[in-house]
Image (cartoon, rainbow, N blue to C red; front, side, top):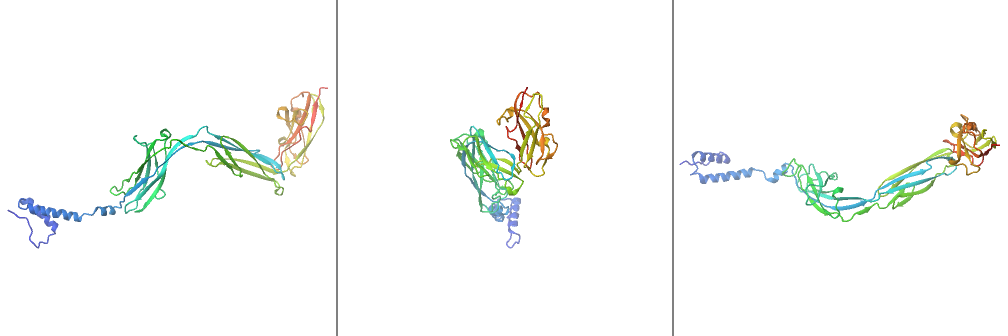
Length: 414
C-alpha cells in the first residue's frame, strides 16, 4: 500500500501540498487515503472561500446601487367649453384738430362652443429612494397607463427627472407626472392602472443595463365631469372687465385728447382684451392724427340750369396747416345728390361725384373748382340737387366738408 503524505517541516505552501496529495491519490489508488482525501478537499474548499470577495464588496467595487419607488395617483374628468375672442375699434384711423378730444369705440366679440369637450387624465408623483451606497446613473422614468384585465397600455409619458437627475446614496426625490386618457378609452367611473418604470444603468447585479423597480397604483375616473370655462371673464388692458356666459359682444368707449401744447402729432394706441381663464387674447390698434381742422366754403355759379346746361362750384379751404400743398384731384371732391334739404346727402341719392381740377394749390385760402361736372351724365333730370364739397384730410389736417343743404340748384326745363 502507498500512503500520500508529506513529512513535517516541508516548506511547500499548504494549498500546493493539498493539490499534490490529490494528484498522488489519483495515481496510487484512493482506498487507503479516502479518509485523508475528504479532509484535504474540505480544507481546500475552505481556503478557496476565504480567498473570495464577499458579495457586498463586489457590489461596491462595481459602483452598483439599489432603488425603491412608489407612485401616487389622482384622477380627473372634465368637460371644457371652447371660446374665441376678437376685438375691433371704430374708427381705426382718424384725423382731428389739435385741442379736440376724439373718441374710439372698442367692441369685444366672443363665441362659445355648443357643448364641452370631454377630457380625462391622471396625475401624481413618482417618489424614488436610492437605497444603496453609490449615486444613480442614467435615471429614467416612464409612466404607463393601462386598463386592468386588458393587455398592453393605452398611453405612456416620459417623466421629467430634471428636478433631480442624479440621486446621491441614501437620498430621495419625488417627480410629478401627468398622463392623459385617450378619448376612445375614456369611461366615467372605470378603473385604470398606472405603472411607473424606474430604471438606472448601475443597478446592483445588472450593471450597464436599464433596471429598477416598477411601482403601480390603481384609481377610478369620476362618474361625472367637472365643467370648465362655462363662463369667462375678459380683462382689458385699459382697465375694463367683462363677463360672458354665452357668446356675444360688449362695447365701451375711450377718448384720446389731442393736447394743444403738443402741436401737430399722432397718437397710436394698442388695446388688448384677454380671457382670464384661458389666456386667449385679441388686440385692436387705433391711430389719431392730431392736426388742424380746416373749413370749406363754396359758391355755385347758378341756382337754376336746364337739363343740358352746366354749372360750376368754387370751394375755398381755410384753417388748415400753414403752407400745406395739396392736389385737388386727390383730396377735394364735389358730390351731387338728388334732394332739397340736409337729409339728401346719402349714398342712395348720389348722382355722381367729380374731383377738383387743380393739380396743386395751397390749401389755406386755395380755391378749387368742379369743372369736371360736365362729365356727369346728361341731360340732367328735372329736379332739385344738393352739392357737398369734401376735403379728404391728410397727415396734418382733419377731413372737412360743407354741410349738406348749404348749396342747392334746380334743373328746370323752362
